[in-house]
Image 1 (spheres, rainbow over the protein chains, first blue to last red):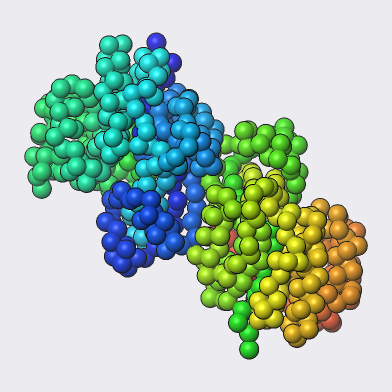
Image 2: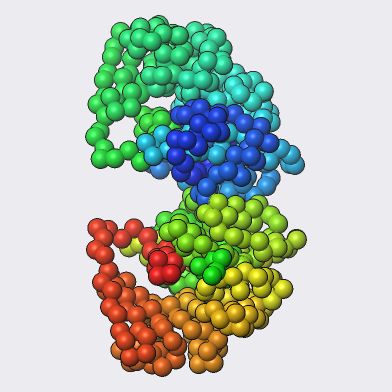
Length: 285
Length: 285
């Protein structure tokens, strides 16, 4: 018996979303399609150049938790916001979605994280994330009862960017496994994989992580190969189960020698890919 | 020669938008389709019951100013925000749209105004507005040079809700007319008309306002009649020009004895009427 289907752990971020043209990314040196980390000064500079925007709660694993809840699942979330206006918005939105969220907010600085997301006419999103309060997430934020009560604990690779979240993850994974639960992660972003390749492989090979979500670029980045098939063969050996998304080509799930191919449902027009992978994971659960 | 096509004056409000079902409006005593004024306690209560939301800058005349700018016009705006997070979002968004906005923000309390907008499955929006800093807009916020430099000064009837904005409007109208410019208003909402009927009629009959925007409900409320034709005949005599929107029936423009009927463009599905009237005015200019 479990109280939650999924416990998600991630960077708690409010998205600030605006349209831009391709030239804007070029001019401002934003890597297209990626999650670009920015400090507070660059965050201010980019905001001053950003068009009129819409604010909405985001964060990869937070989106997944909200998705699980919206599909009727029972979800919980750990993530750090500050006691400020954006933090209040974040807490409201995720709880209003039906997700159990009780991480103690940070008193004082830094402020709640925000990501300026520029959506180009092709529907691709390029993120510029100021981590703010997320840098304070640590093992003290792991609520053991929630970990034990969740069938699966799921976290985002992005958590290797802030300094102490990885300690929280290792602790949560230990508690989960001791309770007979499983642990899952998303590789998050090819550049994130590039920053933490060895640590991610160690998480998988040590059995800290049982199930891995990735898109094809992240998978190829993990194994530093241009061959999707080669990367897929490699990940079969490194984790119990892997689910790899391939945009319009659908997804592939590998589990030991087994392979399941899922076709993508055709869509009329691609508007915005923001959160696509996060919701794939939510639907998978 | 003019520097601005339109100067808009209104309540500077950040919209907090969420979906809800019909029962939610009923349970919470929200008048459907209307702008419901709420105090800070009721604002907190409704927010605690609201689903996950999206934040975006709004306010009737602010939307119109942004619309004018997006259609390539030159717009300016007067409206009061506070020096807080939402106020920063508001100022960013309207300036990023290309609107000249320099109203001095309020230091300290009350906070920037927000409106919780519930959108029902039929696409109708029901607003719950906490006026906050808007209550501090006054004649000291009228920038005479901008009024003189604008072909048209346009304001929202909603400005009769805060205590001192009407003084600002009367002053702006005087400056505009002295500079040979025109003054326009929107009746905003049938309930707003009901609150300030005599004052609105006096604004029109005294020539303080030259051009009036209204929808058919507001127009009928103004003349306390169930007959659209009767109300239309009445407004011909009370202002130089009136533009009346009729949802799917398009709009009617009357100017003395002249009448222009504009058919509505057919749409496939009504998603959300939020801001529809505001953008009608923007397109008209």
